[in-house]
Image (cartoon, rainbow, N blue to C red; front, side):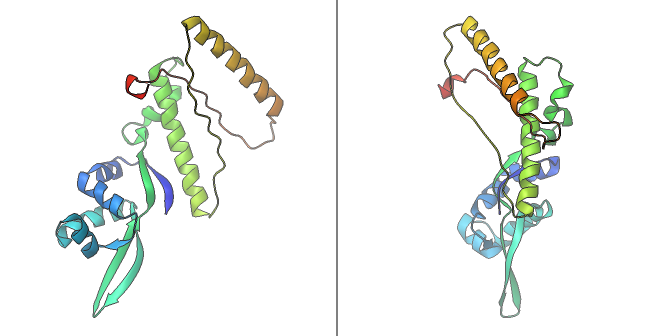
Length: 192
């Protein structure tokens, strides 16, 4: 089971966003059969099977094991990931393409950049997981309060200079390319 799976396909996104299917995915953090899920969620086994087939068609659940009970084979499934993220590219390819927006200071550019980050890291994590490796990443997430727009502008200038200095010091043309994204945005009121 992967830590996170990024969903790029619009039909798979629709499948995972269905309330019943989303609940089944949550329940399948622990492997279960359709009969076991039916008892847990209070729905009929046939209805559960219908939804599981849809989830399985998009690779969102996977076969964990098969058990024989008399002459019947019971399929035990589990979620393919601990959590799922729908990529903006599932809705529109340009939603995850920052190059489609020339205004690098706009909210649209930042959202497209975040979409590209989700898409790229999701693909890399999937490949790393499939090969039994871990994906090395670095994340810095902090809060900063600016007293004024002038302070924010000065901070942006200093941060840009520091990042450019570090990039010049550590970049090698023959090295493995990495993407560095630095972003800042005001916190929504509900997160303050």
